[in-house]
Length: 195
Image (cartoon, rainbow, N blue to C red):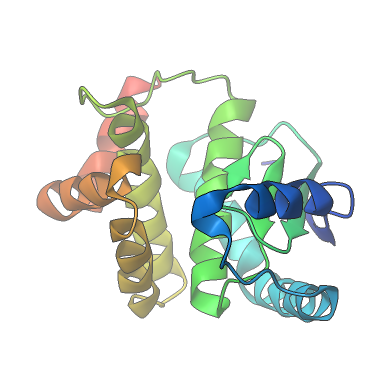
C-alpha cells in the first residue's frame, strides 16, 4: 500500500491569482481576504491536525477501497481564500477550522485517489447529476472515516452544514443519499463497480 507524503505548503504563486480573482468579482467585493500572518498560522494548525489523523486517513482510504495512491508526494497548496477547494492541483483555503480542514482535505484526497487509479466515473453512483453522482461515494467514505476510524462523528454534521450552503454543487443531495442508503452499503457498491 502506497501512502503518499502530504506536503502542506503556502501556495505563494497561486495566492495572488485567487486574491486578484476575488477582488475582480462584484459579488465578492466585501469578502475579507486573510493576511499572510493568518495563513501561516493556519498552515501550522493544518500540519498539526494532519499529524494527528493523516496516516489513519490514508491507510483507511486504501484499505476500504482496495485502491492505492500512485504518487509518492501530494502537495496541498494553502491560499488565503478560494471559492471551493479542488484536487488538481490540490488547493484549499486558509479559512478552515480544525473540523472543516480534516473533512475537506479528506474529500480532496479521495478525488486524488480516484484520479490516480483512473476511475473516470467508473465507481460513481448512478444519478443524473454528475456532481451528485461522483460525490455520493466521496461523502460515504468521509462518513466512514470520521465516524468509524477517527471517532469524530461531530465533524460529519459540520461537513453537511458546509455542503448545504452550496446546493448548486450537488453535495447536499449527495449527503442525503448517504443518509438514506447508508455509507457502508454505498462503499460496498462502489467496490463492486470498480472491479
